Length: 131
Picture 1 (cartoon, helix red, strand yellow):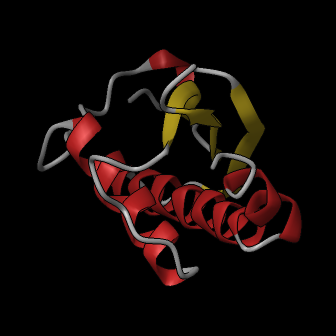
Picture 2 (cartoon, one colour):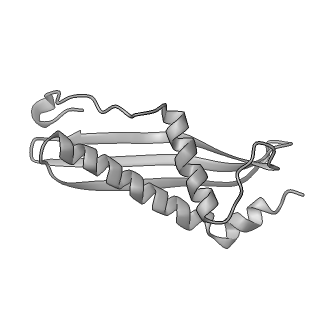
């Protein structure tokens, strides 16, 4: 992570493997919206991180996160549903902790976006296309 004039502040480290973290977070979202997550499901939910940015310029800071998610037919691999989810946050810079807070707030907003999309009738219909 860099601050004003490109000065390095430090590194942001996650406590567990990124794949494990994102799998856990999206499993929670799917379960909160009423879906069961099992390895032998007829559909597969997959994601691809498209953007993960935490930046500052000495006065302000911002975070932008985008993940493309897909719902696939596990048997044939046909894409049944696809969406790019995003979260963003920013404000006055207050040191490394404000950037970390902004990163987490952007992730919270991305997950709220996921909750809204996965709760939709269109997602439900896409899940039920596979017999």
